[in-house]
Length: 239
Image (tube, rainbow, N blue to C red; front, side):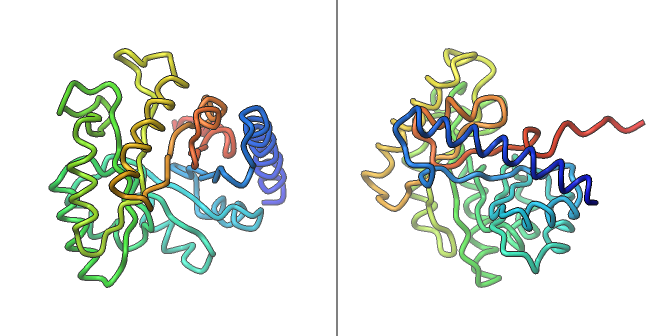
């Protein structure tokens, strides 16, 4: 456990240096960017170590892994983000622990989240997941709604009991005009966020960038970066 703590502390320090340098290069304050550590596939013991090292935001993308982990870490001062594609049959479980769902991309999911948030007396923050590889009014390869669909979905979230529209999220697309152009993709998200805030001034969160492209996200103006392998390492394959 001591070795693992040392490893995570070193990785976290390296990521912190990268974010700090990226903020300086972009003329931004370090406090403008929140690090979310994506702990998918890693055990609750790692989450405990990270919490002890000062991490306050963690993310998961699979409910079957996240639910027991969140329960095991319920005593820790953490904000839990759900970042994976979410099926409506998992909403009851996810609302039980997630403070923010970053992958909201369709009306049916909004309805399900609202119903469950009301039932449990919770308020859940929602980000509209934007697919920059989607055709107009379509969905992306890895989930998400096309830019044309943001306004309608955000309005639905804002009008739904138990939900709060917090902003936008994207994953750098693998195809389409932004493939291989991460900073351009993130800059497009920032522009879309500016549009969103005209109708929803409090929806200031822009979640973009991961281990490989966090610098480009910070340069574009992201408020949150989602980092997994750069902090936790590459998990060896089983078998």
